[in-house]
Length: 280
Image 1 (spheres, rainbow, N blue to C red):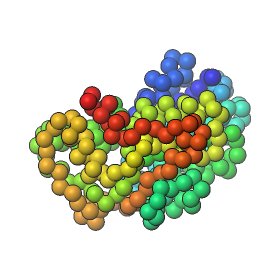
Image 2: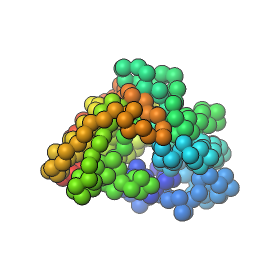
Image 3: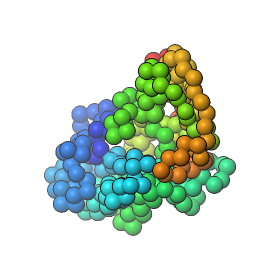
Image 4: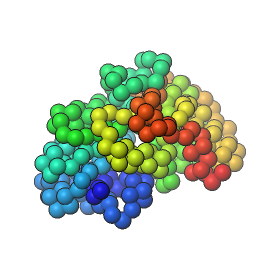
């Protein structure tokens, strides 16, 4: 299988490159600007991949509120570029989306057939990207995930949430973390392995993939501090107290039932994956 991975400098892109090995063409933004349709077309003509895995994303949730054009360029227009080019060369497209396409109004895990209702600009841009994949109608896998963390984290955000919490705790900074947003944290290497398994099994359509279990950001922060043996006090606050520019869904846990049906088992619990990352 000849794979092209876009967004190779991000935490999922790095995990995919490590998982797929040297046979994969893993390209960072500096090597392939996916918002440039001509560059995307030329790259696919040159590589002729069997599968195109789009791990590129504008993922600054608050930043998208003041930079909607940038968010839609990367999360929607670029997806259309990749979908059209993949269809033309006969490659399967794998596109990674987010739990933030949902509004968080329900209290049970979201399944693939639930109607997306994003409540912030980032979520709307990601939903627009999903719609681009659906409109092109090529052989595609749309994978939704949430709360991705991993070694090195997201460089655009200065590390993953876990990295940032530990760094702030070690400097003695005051930690205030929301406790009313519930989701499923996902370890980037586990997500990469799941994605490759789905590709190998020729899965198509929409599949939700997260580590098992759910928590709030406060609970994730407490677990990271405990597992890293970093003493710190964490104040739990509400989303209203945080007053972030972008609204977040209060409940965005994704159901992994379809993934388990396709592969035989769900991913391991998020706390077990977090312990591995932190060397415990």
